[in-house]
Image 1 (tube, rainbow, N blue to C red):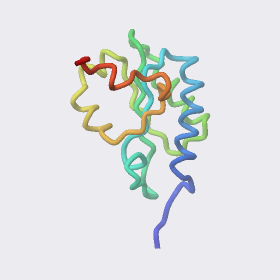
Image 2 (image 1 turned 120 degrees about the horizontal axis):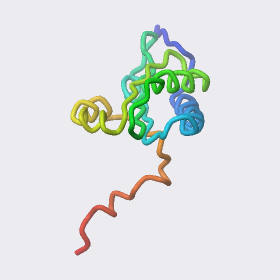
Image 3 (image 1 turned 90 degrees about the vertical axis):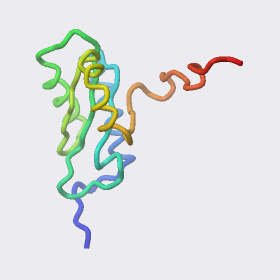
Length: 124
C-alpha cells in the first residue's frame, strides 16, 4: 500500500505554481520559478515537501523569502519549501543550483517568453 499526501497530481501542482508565479511577479522582480526535487522527479511521498526555486532581480530584499512563501501558500501549495535567491546569489551558486534543479520543471518565465535554444547556435 502506498501512502501519499497530498492528494495532488503533478499537473495540478504545476497549475498552482503558475498561479503563484503570476501573483509573485507583481511583488518581486521575478526572473525564474521552478519546481524541483521529488515532485519534479515524480517520486514524491507522504513526507515530501514542495521544493520551489525562486530567483529575482537584484538588489537583495529582506522580505523576499516572506513574500515568496506567502504567495506560494496563498496559491494552495502544500508543504512548500521556497529556495529564494537574487540573480547575483544564484550566479554565485550556479553549480549547486544546476545540480539541484537538473530535472526541474520551469514555470516562470512561461515557455513563450524563453529564448529559443537554436538562437544561441552559430549560423553556418
